[in-house]
Image (cartoon, rainbow, N blue to C red; front, side, top):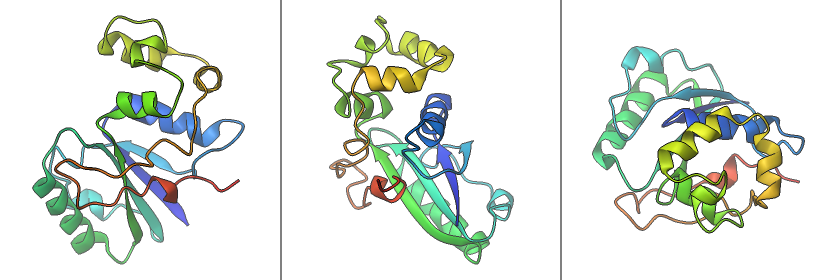
Length: 169
């Protein structure tokens, strides 16, 4: 079975890649593309490029976006690629990626991770960090905590299925 992850931005892509290829291999390996399913229309033609027998994983923040747009994009996937898609899994960050990361570590704020002063500075440091896996160990990252909570915002009707991408140990 193949996994195809769609994430909102470059930070999420780097983070997922780290979780896939770290020594512990914390999540299931797969292709990672940047596409915001809650912020833009998924091109129908792109849906037809999804490989056969693929689990599509949509990673997004619960604090923004448009649930109607998400539904419309899921309809596009189901209409154009249903024969290729084995499952659609929603992995939701509460409220956003940075807060989800703080929740799953010993950090008090996201800026504590790299001793930064702003979210944009944090993102720059994250993207440039050459040993994110070591940093995650240092801040006591817990794979069981990330993406484990259910949403109470505009996406409350969507089940957060982060557990479906985590490797069982």
